[in-house]
Amino acid sequence: MNRVITAIYDEALRPCGLRVSQANLLVAVARLGEARPAALCRAMRLEKSTLSRDVELLKRNGWLESDPPAGGRNQVLRLTAAGSDLLGRAEPAWAEAQRQARTLLGDDGVEALRTIAARLGLRKD
Image (tube, rainbow, N blue to C red; front, side, top):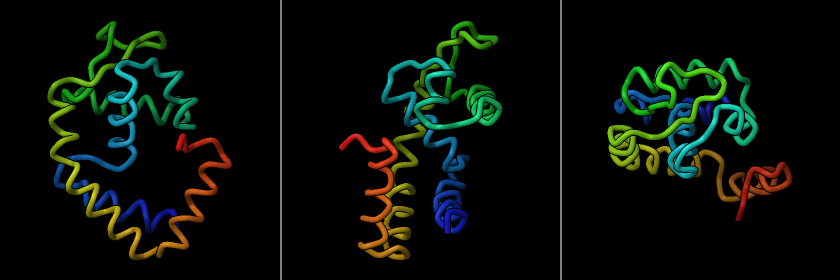
């Protein structure tokens, strides 16, 4: 089921040049203002290599920047103006993917996922 839901989001975000994992990373950095990779790995429960690949791609595309620019384990990541613009343009695609996922899962399925996420500490509301 995970792959089906991920595919819905990836397909919706493809015209923006994003995969759902990359969009989630951009949103996380945008919410934090700036973030170190280790903190993002912990918060998003990602492997360092997975995060590193996405960060480098997002930096190459001009959507993230880092200090120092060369990166490294102590770099601080920030969303660029282009990254912020991209998130704004991707929002309608995200909303459509949300609608499709909700249709597929049904209200009970969505609520079950929210409950699981809360138990895992992945939801703050």
